[in-house]
Length: 145
Image (cartoon, rainbow, N blue to C red):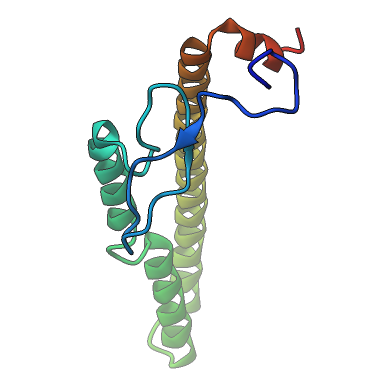
């Protein structure tokens, strides 16, 4: 919207982030109103960025349990092939592995849902913040008013 409230123009209060990239060049992200920094450079959001990075690092620190289960399944198959494990015992183990894999998949889906809920909440909060920063005309334009 233009300053007059018509579509197609640029917001006169929009400007570039005051932060610097790692290579020392200015950040080119656009920020609104009285904001000085984008999400990546805002000192107020530094703790949230650290928490997100820590969560991401923890998720990569060890092989997922599914990889361990796959290794155990391979070992069980090899033990049966070598005659070290009776087939009826192997069948019981495979049933247990199947239950475990389904439980792991359900846990993965639940984590995805929780992550999407957080992203949705953050998006709603950002929209509300922008509406407040720019006045209700921005929110009205989202609703087609």
